[in-house]
Structures are given as C-alpha cells and as structure tokens.
Length: 156
Image (cartoon, rainbow, N blue to C red; front, side, top):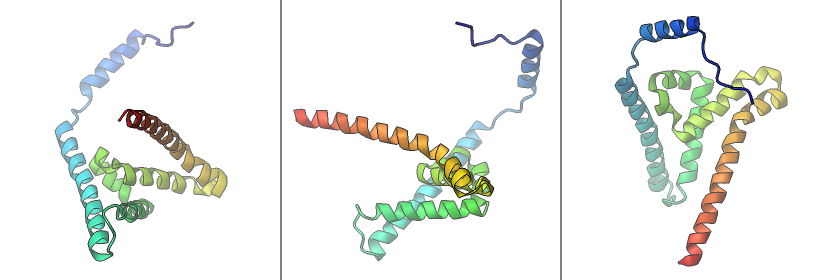
C-alpha cells in the first residue's frame, strides 16, 4: 500500500512558511459575535412567526412549528434568489447556517446556479447532490435514535 501523505518539497515548505507568516490574523471573536447575532436574529424571527401563528391564527404550540418552518424556508429561498442571503452569509458566517434557512439557501443556490442545464439534469440533479447526503444521514440518525428509544422503552 502506497503512502498517501506525501511530504512537501523544501520549496513548498518554504512557501507554506512564508504564506503563514504573511496571512492576516483571523478576527475570531468578531466572527463569533456576528455568527451569534445573525443566528439569534434568524431564531428570533422564527419565534416571532411561531407566536404569530399561535396567537393570531389559533394554532397550538405543537402545530405552529410546521408553518413557521415553511415561512422561514420561503424567506430564505426568496432572499437567496434576490442575492441578499449571500450578502447576509458573508457578514454572518456560520450564523447564517441555521439548519432550516442554511439548508434552504444551499438548495436554492444549487438550483439557481444550474438552471441553464435544464430542470432534470441541471436543477434536479445538482440540487439533490447536496440534499441526498443530508436526507440519508438524517434518515440513518432517525433510525438509530428510534431503535435506542425502543430499546430503552422496553425496559421501562
């Protein structure tokens, strides 16, 4: 079996050292604050929508979740199609990757980027390259959690 990790040449090592020396420092604290604020605002919007559905449209706490998620996805897709979500993501970093809105943005971006290739081979296939892995891992995780729950429930 061949060694898959090749050692860099002396010239490559020298270049890596030079690049690392001249790399600007990352503003980690500022990035964390931005991510926290952006993620918090997205979650606050979701909570406000949930409260709106509960108090204005007489949903229960249990049933208000589905329309809230649907509205957040719709907002994310609209902002992605207008090019606004990308600007938010550049400023917010990981904070814009709140699961529902970040996933909707990723799928909408893939669909928009490949629309010239057609609906099936462009939009459909490229959009679900991302979604496929998320769906598979989500399904496997749900199966494992269900088995563990069942095993724990049998004993109790």
